[in-house]
Image (cartoon, rainbow, N blue to C red; front, side):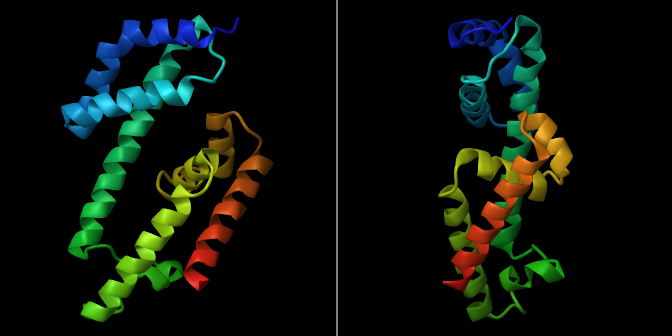
Length: 168
């Protein structure tokens, strides 16, 4: 039996303190934990849920917290120049520690981030689950409740957009 968003809200409010606590243990920041708890509610708002799906709230919160933490770590490492690129990512890697190369790489990184932000939310999520969380297309499809074909199409869309933004 599906619940309506007000029922989800009741579930969320009943578990809110535990959700915030879980997130705070991961990200170690009270303000970020509050923000991510609200993001959890927003992510699930339009998803049909049954009363026994309370664990989905916690899993979503945990995934968002891990995504946030990884994103923060990547940004910090990138700003320190500590990210080493794989051969496929050579266009993003500073060729050496030359200031001009680093500036170009930073500009390309910013361009890619803006490109990703311009994509639909589901496309962004699929791209990040694959590239950051290293989930397979089948795992992403199960997690998001879509077909593997949909995941493949969304990944092609994201990769095409990234290539296009770097070629411009």
